[in-house]
Image 1 (cartoon, rainbow, N blue to C red):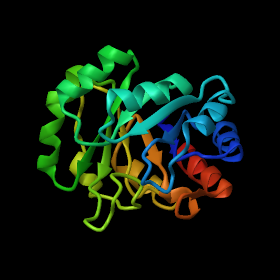
Image 2: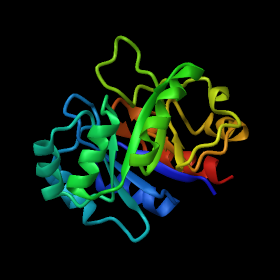
Image 3: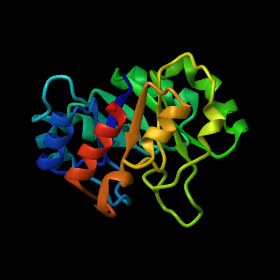
Length: 211
């Protein structure tokens, strides 16, 4: 079955809802300009409440070693998600220093955007495909924008991959009728307002994936 990542979790309630409904990954956003930003101390407390089987993911954009070291010193993470312009060499350096599996996000709007993936395959553990951010946005992900899913139709990759970008409880079944990702990733699509997760929408999204 397709695994589910709920990204931008900030409260014990949403963490509990995600876990009980069957999510596999819980995403914590460590990007200060994001409305889903979580302070490392708050994330530390939530990470200690993670039930068995729910994996913690920290989302970063072009982080320095200092930033990573500070947050990883406070929060136990199962994955580092890199959502910026990190080069393959930078990804390898992060993995070598911190010894934590890496999810690398790629912004997609056209078929040739997939060309960049090959260089990263040797150094990453998961691929995440997200829509390119609108020009008006100051954040790389969580913009509620979808891309043409047909770009990924019948594509095979050497690493497991997640589909992200504009997914909602209403459209995720359509996406899964076209594609077979190893996981789907949702953030803005399960919010009642920008940065505020809605417990029922989280449940509805997970139920839609499962059915």
